[in-house]
Length: 265
Image 1: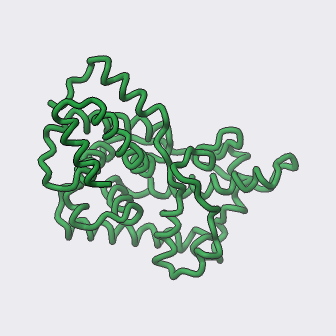
Image 2 (image 1 turned 90 degrees about the vertical axis):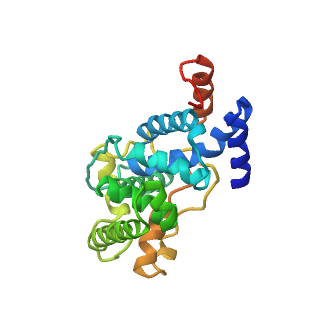
């Protein structure tokens, strides 16, 4: 897979348009998913990811093969996302309305769980958030992480350790999925989220988000078989395998055909 991407890069640099389009297709999901982890809202993530992809394709000639191409893409993504603003909403309440079916309740609970994890990431400062997303969720190694963020491997490990401790400390005290004794539990809070508008059942952001691959339902029982360290990481990695919006490649093609961007400079 990576060798295929490197070949596409070589062809794109010499002006092969089909190679450039295929290159965008091959990296867009990873760029989008990282943006979504950083910005929490799909619309914000879509805007940021398209901006990142433009930066990638207009700077291809600057790729010097000092790292794997996707690592270079993550570096551009990280630099962009660390300066991008995000939006986040909050809210809570009590019992299900009689008109809400069990199937709808299940989707709303999933939406709240995914939304809550996204919101929690926003509580980390940008440097810790991008490090946690790369190191804990995307499982990037410290040598790659140091290149992406332009810091030393030791600094990357220290940031990741600090982010892990902050996330774990908060979730141990507040999250019922990590500690069953906690009152903050998705199933209990889901009706509140609907009543206060945090979750809109008619416009679910994450539960109905397009997925690259169909995933099984989230298994809480499996989560509690793990020790605490693995439990937190597994919970954050349990997001569905989101796919970038279909409009991505069409928008990129329109931009390329418009002549507004001078490529490979």
